[in-house]
Amino acid sequence: MTAYSTAVRAIHLVTNAAWFGGSLMGAVGLNPATLEGDTSQERSRIADTGWTRWGPVQGAAVGLHLLSGLAILADNRRRTLSHPPTTSAVVLKTTLTGAALAASGAAYVYGAKLGEAREDADTSASARTQARQLDQRMRWLQWATPVTTGGMLVLDAYLGEQQRGVAGLLDRPASLLRRR
Image 1 (cartoon, rainbow, N blue to C red):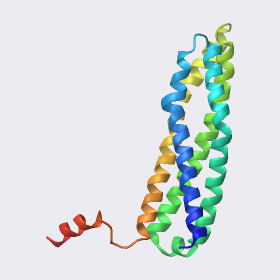
Image 2 (cartoon, helix red, strand yellow):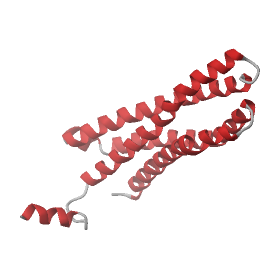
Image 3 (cartoon, helix red, strand yellow):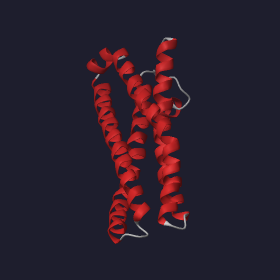
């Protein structure tokens, strides 16, 4: 394994961790924290401030994650094509990546619409209705990105384990069980 390959893999994992961690923090911390505001406008500003500050970091992480993923795929193209368990894992990881991109994009679009609806919710009944509908959609959508990016992290661990032989401390108990 070259230093370049190690660097690309590290970038791929760190950017996935940022994508996962940022979306999880939003679902667990930031989005619920917006309920602390006294008015709809204040709640909207809290969410907007947090996501506006995180957005460029998330965008850079997603972009670098995709580029590093392409580099890893190019580096492992023979293994990916000739080893069925790797092929299956890569297809599943690619599917999860697409789902994570779609979920992140949808959360961005619906989150912006929710913010606009909340801005006017104190003075407009139709904005209140729209905010309630968007809030219901965002309740499940905010979890789609951490679930899919978490699945990608699990698949990265699986793919990494495929590349090493039996040698680790965790392999020893399993090998003892097989001897019995």
